[in-house]
Structures are given as structure tokens and as C-alpha cells.
Length: 345
Image (cartoon, rainbow, N blue to C red; front, side, top):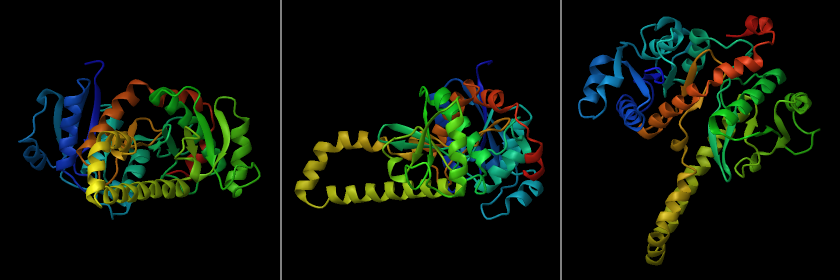
């Protein structure tokens, strides 16, 4: 059991909870013998969902949690008042070292607040960014930050770059990953005040492979492995990515079904097309880790299906075994966080 990664899953969080969450958890168990899952939520409901599913019962436990934090609830108030909610109880399993990781498709705000209030930031980390993998022409890139820190300062973006570089090298396996900052042009003098302040700081770092600015149109081409920005910009990029991807898929399907000739052609190209489109399927890449905490927190998309939940859970196994949190602490742990503790959450 020493090699087993224990994962607390919020069974009640998300648009498709609890069935898709529970199904995703059991699917993950069937795909890896090295994980143990705590399904946290309303016990009777979870038991009912499990009745028709096949899974190794010795590697799954139910943790009863009678309350649920809804998406529209104010995050800080919900975390503090709903201590018996599935989200809070799952996070506490990580805080108490009973679980190595936490996965939820629930309220983004509650996950961000709960991760920092309950689990806490690692030593030296000023802000914890959300960092999803996004598909590109050359593989994947890490978008950091995509939703946690809309008021980030230059020093925060510098830390995001260093954390993202560690993640891509140790978890994804990209050696000397290329780090770029999102900008409105390639020239160093372009950008808003935040980008202009951050650029020379990134350029001076010797422990990352900083390649300069990246324009939004170049992100899908894979011109950088780590794409650094504050959360407002990152969230816009992520949502546009998702929207364009969905529209393109719909348009392609319409075109392939528009005539008899098109349908015949569709049959011929179906295997190759399916393989190509799979690379741009967001469900293949799991969730977005909240980097820089004392434990692993992964935010899955609110509309996640079982496949996305399973991939998010399996992502936790690799992340935990690579000890990324320990490496982040080692790199950033000597910085002064006193000021940040005054204005942090």
C-alpha cells in the first residue's frame, strides 16, 4: 500500500453529479491498481449509484457528507458555514493527510477558497494558480493562471512561470519547457503595465527557458509549453478555446453529413479524423491543478462526464508520485511570504 495514491473525490460537485462522478471514480479504479478513492457525499445516494457498477470494493470507501455547496453560494461563507459539505470534508481529508489529492467538479470559487483556507499554501508560494493543460498542434501547453488570481502582480506571474516549468518538466515530461508570457505583440516594449513589469523579471531568471511574448493566435500552434498570464486573460483564453473547439466540431460534422458524397467521404476518413479530433478533446487532459498548495487540489470542469473525472483522478496519481509540491517548495521556499500573508486569503 506504500505506493498507493489516496484520492478524495467530491461526489456531489458538478452539473452531472453524482452519477458521472461516481462512474468516473470506478472507471479510474479499473484503469489503475495504484489508487484508493474516498467518495465524499451523501452516503445513501452514493451507495445507490454504485449498485450497478463493477469496481474493486477494497479500494473504495464512502465518507458521508450531508451538505452540498452550490455553485451560486458565496465561496468564503459557504466554506466556513458548511463544514459537513462534501467539498469541505474531502479537502479536510487532504489537510489531515488521510488523502494525497482532492478532485471536484463543483464550485470553482469554493474550491479555490477552500484549497487555500483548509489545505493552505506551500512555503514560499505567494498565490496559487489554476493551471490546465490545453491542446496544441505540437502536443499540450500549460495555461497558468486560468481563473484563480485576477489581480495578480508581477512577482506572482514570475512564480507561476517557475511552477509551470517544474510541472511541465516533471509531470508531462517536456525537457527544458519553453515559457512565454501572453502579450499583444512579440516586441518586449509592448503590453500593459503588468506585462511590461513582468517581462524583464522573467527574462532575468536562469532556472526557466523564457522565450519571450506569445500572442493568443500562436498558443494553439504550440509556440510555448508554459503560457503565463493573470487569471482574467487566462480564463478568456480558456473559454474561447473551448467555444471555438465546440463550434469547429459542429461545423465539421455538418459538412460531413451535407450530401451523399460527403457521407461516403466521411466513412473513409472517419478513423483518421477521430484520432485527430481526440487530440483536441478537453476530456483527455483531466482537470486543472491548483498549484502551490500543501496538498494536491484538482478542479475538473463543471460539466465533466465520467471520462473527464476518471482522467482527473489518474492525473493525481502521476502528480503525487512526481512530488511536484515538494519541488515547488524547494524552489520557492526561501522567499519571504510575510507581506503576502497579510493580504492573502
